[in-house]
Image 1 (tube, rainbow, N blue to C red):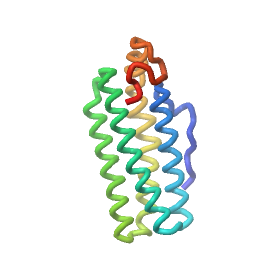
Image 2 (cartoon, one colour; image 1 turned 120 degrees about the vertical axis):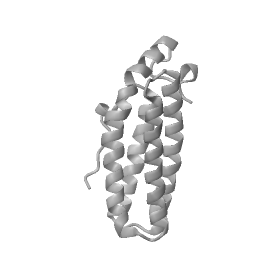
Image 3 (spheres, rainbow, N blue to C red; image 1 turned 180 degrees about the vertical axis):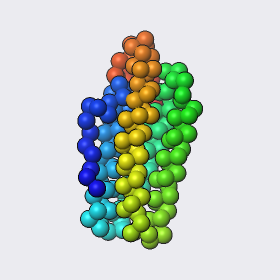
Image 4 (cartoon, rainbow, N blue to C red; image 1 turned 45 degrees about the vertical axis):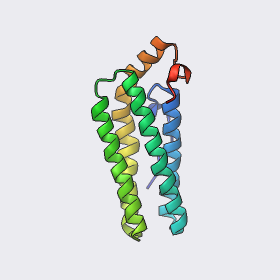
Length: 149
């Protein structure tokens, strides 16, 4: 699959969340490359583990920021995160079970759902609330006033 690269079009208006998204892009690119080039079980497993852990970290941070910004769809957005986490967990379980061939399709689906659908649609929707809250708190785009948690 042709790998997407970070572009400012993916910006959600928060420097810390944009940084998280860049890292997720990188991890998904590593996973895509590892599955496309038939890397060893250990390599793919390691990338999957790091991706799952970082995704959980990012989602909790993003959820805290959305709540702090009083984003009205925060609860629904959190459910989307839980759904993505389930997909990552299922991919990890299938990998551990030895389903290497089916994994490539799952990874490609995850790439599309996460990168194009979730970030460009769901994450960008909270941008105006986060930006307004950061400006009000004097924390525009940065870590001041607890915007990094």
